[in-house]
Image 1 (cartoon, rainbow, N blue to C red):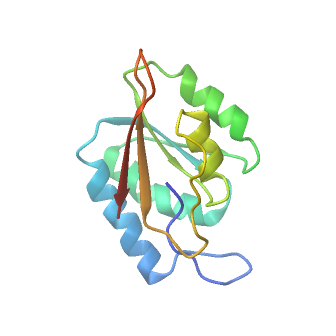
Image 2: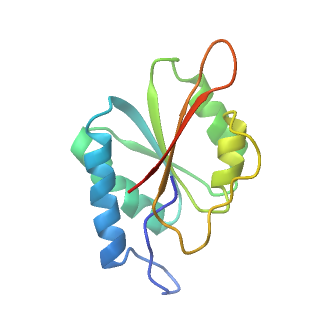
Length: 134
């Protein structure tokens, strides 16, 4: 998913609406058995990811913004049954989705902070994909 709504500050932090979305992510994640959470080095993805990591009792791994290939490799190295939540910037979401088998053409608008993409890999054929809004 993309990080929650941020302020326009030079060092953006989550707005009140962004904090509500981060809390919604906690509620959505509580029904899953996440073992890993990966977020991007900037403050806004970390602020989005931290409440979920705390609620689930897991640590989150911070990955530099431009290390998409490394992030994909790390996720693929996890056991198949593991669930991984990735919080990143809107510009990186389409590439991440494509790397995990989603067809091209997904674009996340700069003012859209609600999409949550769920990709479930399958041994035979393309992944199962679910699109949710927080």
